[in-house]
Amino acid sequence: MKHFLLVLIILLICLQSLQGVEEKLPMCGMSAHRGENGIFPENTVIGFREAVRLGAAQVEFDVRRTKDNRLIIMHDTTVDRTINGTGQTTDLTFEEIRKLDAGIKKGERFSGTPIPTFEEALDSLPQNVWINVHVYASNPVEIATIIIEKKREHQAFMACNRNVALEVKKAYPQIKICNMERQDGNISQYIRETIEWKCEFLQLVKLGMPEEMKALKDAGVRINYFYARNPKHFKELIEAGVDFPLVNRATDFAETVKELGF
Image 1: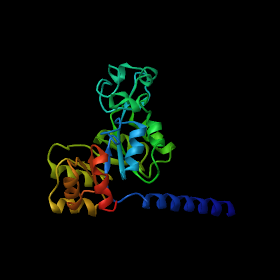
Image 2: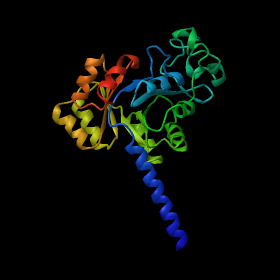
Image 3: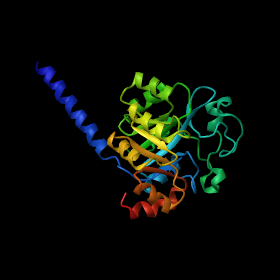
Image 4: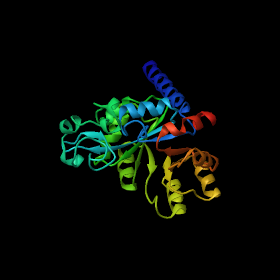
């Protein structure tokens, strides 16, 4: 009996600790799209850290696989645009991709910046910012497993379609989901289904009607928006009820974030 009570007390302490961490997460603010991607190289550890330094409440990045099934951070299907190399990520091994330079195209001072692994991306971010994991990789349950193993389930959420969400939730009900179905379609249906499916986030590309935005708030759904064009637009989105407008060039929004008190 004493052993049972001791275990129960420990579990309660752990639960309270986790709740305390989640309470410290921002209610709203800037979501840095691929990290600070204006001055710094996108989807890199140094870009993620710079975004946090600039006041990002959320950092978004993209997960893909290499030929040998390693999880890396890369938006495009090829490395051509951002890296000093060429080829499909699925045709290159992790060792081949790791030898490429993810920073040189942004300037000499970033020379030698590596393409990060998913684990390195998670490790680079503090416990008090949201982590927006955009899933392009197969076997999404592995991504969820790493989130759990890294103890980031309180802050990391997986942006994915319905089928991926169902697969992940079956394995790990505690993983948070950003509904990415029907973004470019019927906004009202998208909002309604997000609430019905009990997703924790959605990513709007167009604002819903005021009553729909309220319904999302009432259901506890956090609202991302892609994307804020400039600081004035950022403020307008916040006033309309958006929690986390995604931004490119986080540097350009840092003063606005301070002004709004985020």
